Amino acid sequence: MTDHLADGRALISELVGDRAGDWDVAGELPVETLRTLGARGLLCAQVPADHGGLGLSSAANGELTAHAGSLCSSLRSVMTSQGIVAWTVQRFGDRTQRRELLAELTGGKLTAVGFSEPGAGSDLAAMTTRIKADGDGYVIDGEKKWVTGTRYADFVLIIGRYGDGDGAAAAIVPVDAPGVHIRPVPHPMGCRAAGHADIRLDQVRLPASHVLGGGGQPLSMLFTTALTYGRVSIGWGCVGILRACLDAAGRHAQQRHQGEVALAEHQLVRGHLADLMVAEQIALRACEHASRQWDAAAPDLGTMAVLAKHVSAQQAARSAATAVQLLGSTGSADGHVVARAFRDAKLMELIEGSNEICRLILADHVLSTTKTG
Ligand SMILES: Cc1cc2nc3c(=O)[nH]c(=O)nc-3n(C[C@H](O)[C@H](O)[C@H](O)COP(=O)(O)OP(=O)(O)OC[C@H]3O[C@@H](n4cnc5c(N)ncnc54)[C@H](O)[C@@H]3O)c2cc1C
Image (cartoon, rainbow, N blue to C red):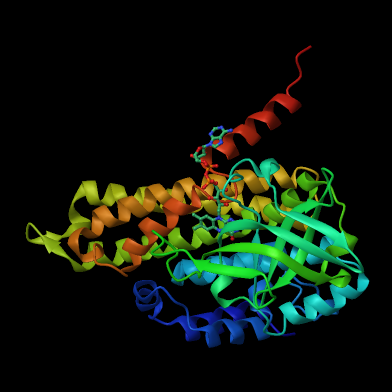
C-alpha cells in the first residue's frame, strides 16, 4: 500500500531543501513548488480518496503539516489555507461543488480564505462583506485583509454576510474576476513568503454555482468549521517550528565552543535544551489529542482544536526565543532557521484566535462543563 505520509514528507524535503531562508528573505515561494505539491494532493491531504485526495487521517496530515512547518512556515501557511478551503467545501458544498472543487484543490489549483476585515478581526461577527443574490447569480461587496496565499491563489474563498440578513455564505471568487482588487501586505513580520494580501471586492458578480450550498448558513457555524481545521493545522505547524528549533539548538550546543568547552557543557545551556524538548512534547501531545478527536468526530473537537493551537503557538513563540538565545549571533541573521521561527511563531499567537480569544473560548468551556450544584 502507498505510504502517502512518507512519500509526502520526502517530496516536501526534496522541494524545500535548504531554500526556505532564501524564500523568506525574498518574500516569495516558487509557485511551481506549490503547484507540484498541490497536484500531488499534499496541500490538503485529508481530502478523501473518493474526491481525488490522499485521504490522510487528521493525525497523519498533522505530521505532514509539522514536517512542512519544520522546514518553512510560509509553505505550511499556504497548506493550512488550502486545507481550510477544502474542508469548508467538503462540509458546505453541494454534490457538484464537492466533486468539481475538491478535484481542483487536489489537482494543482491554489486557493486562500478570507474572513478578516478592517473592522472584523477577533470579532468576526462584525463582518460586513455582503454576498447578495442578483438575477441568476450573486454580487459581492466588501473588504478582506491579510489573506494568506492570495499571491499564489487561482481563487479565494470569501466568507461574508448573506443577502440582507444575519446569515452567512462562502463564495468561490476567482482572483481575476472583474471588481477584485488585490494589494499585497508589504513586508510582513513573519511567514514572509506566504503571499498575504488585502482584497477589495467591488460589485464582484459570480454565477450561482460559486456560492457553497446556496448560502444562508449561520455565520458562526461557517467560521467555526473552517477555523477548527485551521487551528489543528496551525498547532501542528508549531510542532514543526519547535522541532526545527530543537534540532538547530541541539546541533549548535555541541558544535560551538566557549570557555574551552562545547556550549552543551554549560548547565544553563543544557537547561535550554531540556526546555525545548519539553515544549515540543507538550505541543505534540495537544495536537495528537485534537487530531484523535477529529478522527473520532468527537463532540469536544472544537475546544480541543483551540487548546492545541493555543498551547502549540505559545510553546513555539517562547521556544523560538530560547533558540535564538542559545544560538547567539549565529541565529540572528535574517533567514536563519531560528530567526524565522522567532518571527513566524509570534504571529501564530495572533491568528485563528489570538491567545486572548483562545483563553476566552477555553474559559467558556470550563464554565459550561462545571457543575455548580
Ligand atoms: C500572519 C497572518 C496571517 C493571516 N492570515 C489570514 C487569512 O488567511 N485569512 C484571514 O481572513 N485573515 C488572516 N489574518 C488575519 C487574522 O485572522 C487577524 O489578524 C486575527 O484574527 C486578529 O485580528 P486583528 O489583527 O484585527 O486583531 P484585533 O482583533 O484587533 O486584536 C488586537 C488585540 O486585541 C485583543 N482582543 C481583541 N478582542 C478581544 C477580546 N474580546 N478580549 C480580549 N482581547 C481581545 C487580541 O487578542 C489582540 O491581542 C492573518 C493575520 C496574520 C498576522
